[in-house]
Length: 411
Image (cartoon, rainbow, N blue to C red):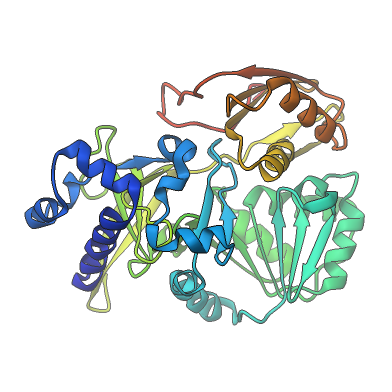
């Protein structure tokens, strides 16, 4: 790793341990001062943090320098998608966010000539007031739960009328759009020049099939809301953005694995000063390899397991994105300030879904169940039988040590 970025990594850690309550608590647990920790120059001695450890205390991850900005709503506020079953509010200031995305924008321009001013179509789990889509400036946001055979033709027509030059979407959603557009003999999206796949692992051959069907450039981006850009796909692997995010691969005991060995992926944002993520586990598994190209060393990440791309099986033999199950949770979290901490759905059959929930004890369980049912019945899976199980923790799978938010037991 370039010495500039090593220094930047340590600078961010120092900032976090001096300004963020969560990290100061970590120091107290270690019985050490920051000067002692930094003086040893042993990065691997810094503790790691996991999303399920901080979700109930996310406010402790906000820098004291930005507490007033959060309260006054002067920051960019987003949240993780729940793809790991755990929901987390994330804050950025505009300058840091732009710096974290700069290398990705350079790659988009090199790959397909895409600029920030170009029209973009992207997809969210849910939209306010149950909208099918909304347009703001040069961006069209489409509700994922409306991407079902029932609504697809009308939604596809609206996208085509918007004339996007590029789209960001999950691989499974891209495949769904492509396949059903073919079956329904819908016209191609002539304006489309570039498709960026993200959020899931793409299966072999999908990109070639999409490029052939849609007549545009397709590539994968690997990132998270917490740190934004991590890497860009190049030759079946991700070239890491060392200038924005430090990536390390650790074993189950938190020790660094050797070059090319598989382990759990941890990231450190080199830019997010509002919510510094230092040695943060993102729930994926992979391995890193270094390669010298053009007299420079580059690090590449090979993913082995990323966020799940399962789909719900319907009675008619069709399938839809499991994201529809997140819609009621996101609406409840939006209205009641994140009372749902963890969520997992298990499909037992085409008519039965079991839900596991970890939530604020002060929020009534009956109230949540009624709200969930009220929202889900307006979707294409509204006639399924939903059962609810409440607990204090959703435990990782025994064989992977990870939590999958959606499990299809019919597979």
